[in-house]
Length: 312
Image (cartoon, rainbow, N blue to C red; front, side, top):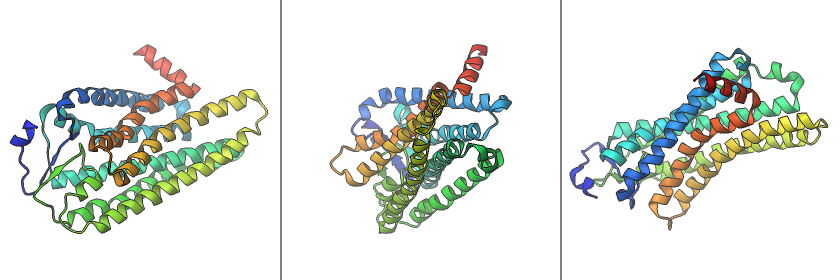
């Protein structure tokens, strides 16, 4: 708590507390944070390197993996460096503009991540349920266009969050009980009416996540039906392995995300640091585990990873 005695928020500055109630353990908590972050960076950069160098992997599925890897690099990068500055050096100050910028990019990349997962589910649906038309429906150019649409959607939906907050007055107490500028946590620092911010954030969460999860569920409903119709055991197993990898990645992303958002909004009796740890699980674990899951479950990528690992 001594750090609070020497840190003073200026007129346009916030103070990120980190993990309230666990300040004494900040140095030790920073160790798994940094390890998860470094492993995630290594794995995702390896996927980008392998797919970039191997012509045989220049296919829509692997282009989507590269987009997912870029998202998995960006997401923790907007959080972990600042979190480590808080944990190790008690550098807790962040300007209002810096806070709103971090919020925009963090939520924007999260929404982009969700769009990529929807596109991956659609890619598997076409590959399994309509394989003869796969190359005409989904080409590398089509995937790139879908990526641009997903990015535009993320920017348009997230941009109002910092714009709405920038119009609000903020109270003298600017201690944000969080390690990053999460929208709800920053909104609570305002002395003005935040009902519009709360409503927009809640509607955005349920509509976007509800739509994305519905599309994914429909895709995998058709995929599961098609899998049971496959007579060849070898083709059945290959298809099942690919779908298992995608399902693991999606469950690993959406489950902590949904649980964190719901407990943050409705679980008032839960300790603040529990909210924060849950909120950071889907920022750290998926980027670290996604390359491992795809490396294990996708034979073509696994073989290339083995080749480059031996070279290194």
